[in-house]
Image (cartoon, rainbow, N blue to C red; front, side):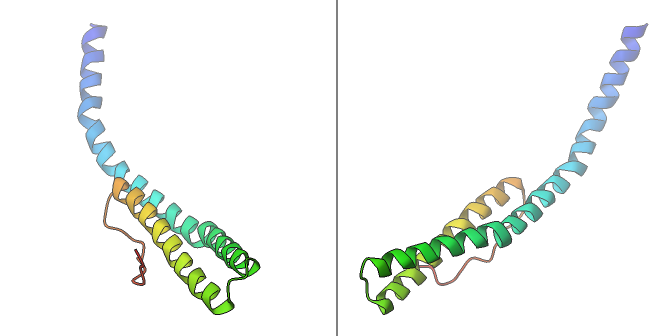
Length: 109
């Protein structure tokens, strides 16, 4: 008799599980999107700033004229921002929904 009740209980769980997953998955996706937004705006922004500054310093230290170094650094910054945005967009698309990251229109591919 115990086997019959176990089977009914498993069948009930099997019927309920898809409903639970339907409720949980969007929340997990939203949590991941929120986390990525925070990372993008804080950690990634700080890292991007450091790498852009280091890039500029290396150009100037190598004797590249200031105006050219500034132009090259701006292009470098835009390329890095686009790479980060593309990576975040790819992760988000895997979790659900359209991209939330504003993609820079000044893209020099």
